[in-house]
Length: 269
Ligand SMILES: Nc1ncnc2c1ncn2[C@@H]1O[C@H](COP(=O)(O)OP(=O)(O)O)[C@@H](O)[C@H]1O
Ligand SMILES: [Mg+2]
Image (cartoon, rainbow, N blue to C red):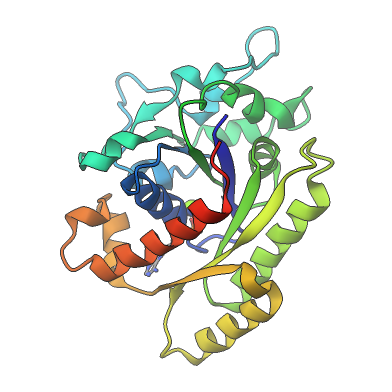
């Protein structure tokens, strides 16, 4: 089994998907084999990794990876057929693969009351990521069923936040939810890794104060700070790898440093 990490925050816009995509990119550049599970029905990670659905022949997605069969069972390894290459053509892209998502993943959330529902992702991934070093799961901005399924399938949780009050408060909720729910999710060894503060602008007084506050709350679990750069928005917008963007060396360096800390602190499988 790969070492699996759920990237979350109980708020949208907290830069979760950017962290999942760019961390996967930096890890792959460093030679690691990485899986990304898009577990947000918005499918932003899938699109930003260059994945495209085919409307004439819809591809398998996360919704099918955890879908009950006619016997109301999700079988072990069900995700095997859903893993797909990403759409980027840069050389390190071959070390990243994807379980994509589309809005139909939302339909699975309403099945929370069915037998064994919260174990579905863990069961489905079983045996399908043994050849990978890491799997990053991009969670939706909620602590509901989809996020609980992701946490039930992971070894670690990592939070992403903007340097703003509501976002940091929502990261604290995610951290505390992980600690309070690990046992109930049948995953007592699940542990919280830390927090990445993204889109930081030192010219904004509130950002300076909130970064300070985040350091007081999370201590050395603040893993790193990603500056606010339009280059990051553009790369996400146009679904591009950073290596294909000119003048991106500063930003690449930031994510490469994060990847180094990740490799140091997160034991590979
Ligand atoms: N460091 C950054 N600087 C500027 N824009 C950023 C940065 N990180 C992320 N963004 C942009 O912020 C927006 C929201 O980020 P996203 O990853 O979609 O958040 P979430 O997944 O938490 O909802 C996206 O348009 C993304 O490209
Ligand atoms: Mg997102």
